[in-house]
Each structure stands twice: as C-alpha cells, then as structure tokens.
Image (cartoon, rainbow, N blue to C red; front, top):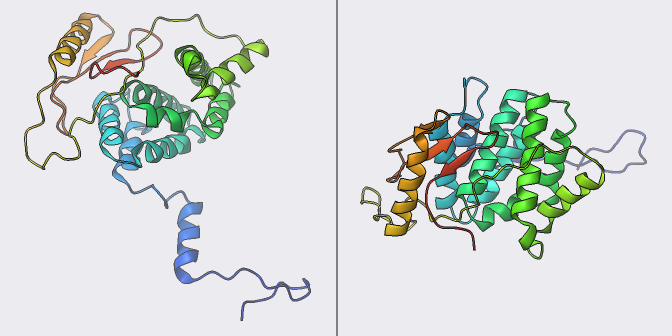
Amino acid sequence: LAPSRPGGGGRPAQAFSGARLGQVTMDFFGLGGDANTPIAQAVNRATSDMLISTDWAVVLEVCDLVNSTRPDGPEQAVRAIQKKLRGSNPKEISLALTLVETCAKNCGVNFHARVASREFMNDLVALTKGRNGFEVQDQSLRLIQQWGIAFQSKQDTMPLFYETYEALRRQNVSFPPVEQDAPMFDPPPSIPSDTAPGSAAPAPAPAAAAAAAGAGAGAADPGAVSLGMLGGGSNMGASCSTGGKLTFCLRRASYVS
C-alpha cells in the first residue's frame, strides 16, 4: 500500500518506483532528459565558463549536430541552451546567446520554430532587465531586435519574434542602433543522414562555394577569424566576424525561403 499523508484523512501520497525516483533526482539536478546527448554535451562545451572567448569550432559543431540530428536536434539544442540562459553565470549566459544567434543563422526553420516559442522568448525578455550585467542585457536586446526585423514577414508562421520586439518597443524599451547583419540560413547538414560513415561528403554546389569564398574574404578584417577545415565532415570551413556587436558566421549559401 502507498503511504498516507499524516493528518491528511488517509489520502495516499504519490509513491515512486526506484527507477522513477532516480529520474526525478536526475531531473532535479539537471542531469536527466537530454543532458547526455551529443548536442547537449556540445552546448555545454560551447558555453563553458572556462573559455576565454567563444570557441567557434565548437559553436559550429553544435550547428552541424542540430542539422544532422533528425528530428529532435533543434529541440535538444534549444532545451540545452535554455538551461544556460536560466543560470546565474553572466559569462555562460553571454556564450549561450552567441550560440543561439549563430544556430539561428546556420540552422533551418525547425530550429527557428523552437526558438519562436513563448517560453524561450520569455527567457530572452527576462535577460533584458539587466540583472546579469550590461553585456547580457545588450546581447538579448540586439537578438530580439534582429529577430523581430528578420521575421517580420513571417508573422503567419512564427509571430512571437515580431510580437516580442513590438511589445518591448511599446514599453519604450531602448534598443541599440539597428545593424546590418547576416540573414538567416537554412543549410543542409554537413554530413547528410544517408551518408555512410567514412565516405566523402558531397562537394558543395558552385553557388555555395562562391558564397563561402565571399564570406572567407571577410576574414581579412581585424575582427574576423577564419576557421578553415573543421571536424565532423565540414568541408567548407567558416568565416566568423566578431568586429560588430553581433556574430556573423556563414557556412553555406542556402537561404531561408
């Protein structure tokens, strides 16, 4: 029999099996669910407090994992990033904001849809209050503004990007100056799901190669870093410019339609 609550009129308390109790304990400490997936582990590495600055190789590894893990890659990544955004370490939060921004530019509509949830956008709005320092506040405001403008034409499918931006503007929230930044991308995974392990990745299309070469030219700027050949089957490299307030990472030339 399940134990009864003392003084509760004999109402049975919830009884947990050993397995269930173990799961509850793991969830309480943030160790259950998606915590041990390759995506979650990569997110943890990309947002580690031990990093001196953004590790672009790991950030783009997360993008590749999101694009190649079907169908749960976007959801796993967003959950792992949310855990970081809800933390109390400003450095990890800042790295998580850079990560989600870069994923939005290098991953597709399924990732955008997970980010465009009320739960995630509320987490982002909470960061604009400034309780985690100016850098986090500035990053979160820039992201909300960037996404609100970029997805204004997609209010029929992902309305919360623009609605969140407009709601803050109506509250007279002061946003940073609008910057011309990279558009969103919808690239295929670096290693398609039907590519056998050890086989060569397909050559990029001429248009993609040309666009990648154009992006690589930007690496000559003082604020840009060329990552060259990355692991995980990436054969096009990347150019990530950190000269502005927002990150610009162009892996491939397939735009979101």
